[in-house]
Image (cartoon, rainbow, N blue to C red; front, side, top):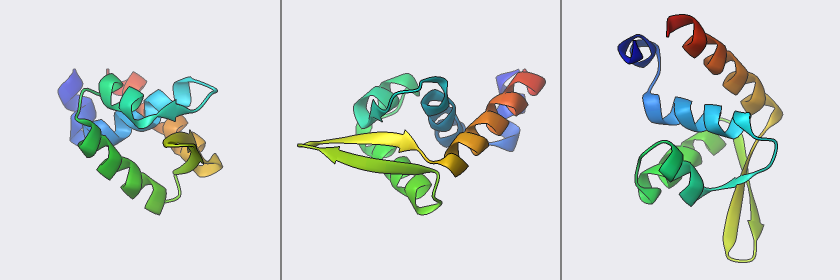
Length: 88
């Protein structure tokens, strides 16, 4: 069934949005990389693209960047999660 979901979405970015949408608190890039099973550098590249689209925002706390979904990102995350449920 995973192939059905992969047909419609690029797996890693979609899974990052879903992972961020599951929790109310922000996450670190390294946490997301582990959750979606990719390297930290790949996760950062994806997150930068998501930021360009206005789906996530970064908040710097000391040396650490915290990632949060924007309002638009929350909506997209909810829709992707719903579609994943339907095709699975």
